[in-house]
Every structure is written in C-alpha cells, then in structure tokens.
Image 1 (cartoon, helix red, strand yellow):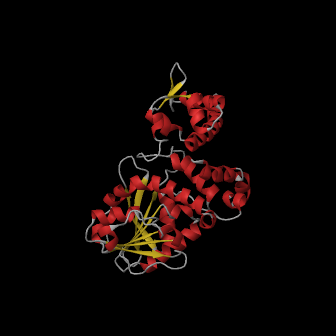
Image 2: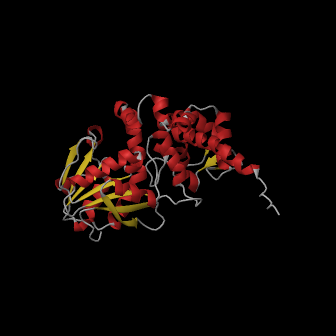
Image 3: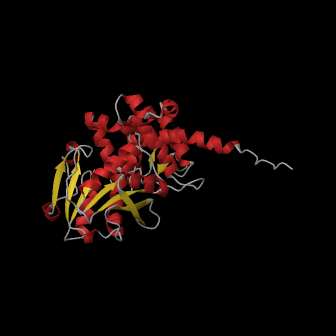
Length: 345
C-alpha cells in the first residue's frame, strides 16, 4: 500500500516569502535609527516621522507590522515602545545589529541576491556579477563600503574573541600570528589572557591602518604587518590563527592558504581555523543559510567536519581536534597539525 504523503501547508512558504519584506523593513528602520529614538521615551509615529523626515503613514505601517512580530510595541495612542527584540537595533549596545542592517551595506547584498539565478547556473559569485568585482576587491576600492563591512564584522566577531582565547591554550605557544586579523580584536583577547605570549597582526594595509583593539602594553607585545596572505605570510610563528577567514574561499584557494600557513609555522606549531562546523544532512543549522550567503557574496562556503578534514588533508595538515568555543556558540577551534608532527594538539 502506498504511503500517504504529508499534507502541504502553504503557510510555511508564505511565511518565508513574507520574511523578505520583514528584512527590508528592518533595514529601513535601522537606517532611520528608530530604536535609538524610542529607547529614550515612547514616541508617536508623527514625532518619529518629523524627526527622521519619513512619510508618517508609511512609517506607521512598517512599525505596525514589526510590532506584530514583537519588534517594538504600539500603545493605544499610536506611540511606539522599545521591546527586547528591538533593543539590538540600537547603536552602541552589546549585540547590536544596526550596522549590519544599514542600507549602505544591505543595498550591496540585495543587488547581489538579484543575481542568484546566475550563480545557480554558473557557480560564479553573484556579487561579482552585480558589482563587477569580487567582494574583497570591491571593498578595497570603496572605502565607505569597506568601513561598513569592517564595522559589521567587528560586531559579529567582537563578542566571540574572549571565548575563543579561552577555548584553546594559546599559552603553550610563544608567537601567535593572526592571519586576516582585522583590527586586532582576537589577538588582543589572546594577549590579554596570556601575558607571556607575543603576537603578529597580519591583514591588508587598509585594514591594519586602524588597530582599534591593540594599545599600550598589548601593542608592545605585538607587531602589525600589512600584506596579502596569498602572496606572503610572516614566518616562524608557533601558532597561525584564521578566524572566519577560510569560509570566504573555495576549497582550492582555502587549501592554498592553509598550506602557506603550514609552510610558515615552526616545526612544533599549530594552524588553528576558527569557524562554524556545519551539521550534515537534514539537521537544522543556521549556517546552511549562511552557506548560501557565502555562495552569493564570495566563492566560499561553510563546511562540515568531514569537509574540513578533507580540506586540512589537502593542505598538508592533520585535523587533530575540534574544540567547541563555548556551549551554545556556533564556532569551534579546529586544530591543524603539520603532517610532520602528529603529537597531541
């Protein structure tokens, strides 16, 4: 007897389609700074419109829709209040997502997703099709976009840095090289926790021009080196760390980068990749959506443990350990050991 198929629920698909409108409305609200304004006191939509130059009725309809989802709340006098969900739309608070939602950055994203059919048919990054350059080349030529990108990445990475420094014993090493280390957040966390460790912050010139996190005694224990990690990598470090870097690249390019780190590391050193490890198969995992985002923006991808193991093997590394950063975190520290040294990680 044939099995009965599960009855379709159109509401599931309609909810997904509706989420596109919700996302775009959040972008507009973030750009206008609405959460910052109502954090001080509840405000009527007329007052909000006057303060931002928005059209009152259009703004009201957006806020009403968001309030129905718990993002802001409306009272009987058409005043809008901040809610817990809306609080991370504020500027300068822990966990803020406002910079990630600002239109200067999101317009680049939306134009890129418009070229998703091209990616599906060709395997080429949609961002390149939409904007004429690979993502990181585009950012290098557009300082304002690069600044928005750096701020968004800092808001994602910043809260993780101390947890990464605590998850792995960096104190066993003398010199830690942070490859693609941005403005130094992770390296600062490592140096702060391990006072006998020295560091090298290595990234592109326009990135390391501002080392916001390294100052005073930490900067005295750190060298800042500008360069392109596909051309040269500082040699003779004891540990090479790549946090949220490997997922930006396809397997061949990522393997080449890891191989360069393997060649640069001292004989008893380690190559650490700090990334999300995606669950395989049908298991729910937010990084499966992130993986599609990487496909659109770059030629990179999120990876499962098996895919990381294969990637490390292509790079002359053995994946020795996978260390979850902390309970509830999506990140892990993947410990790579050069094949010439298979001692415990």
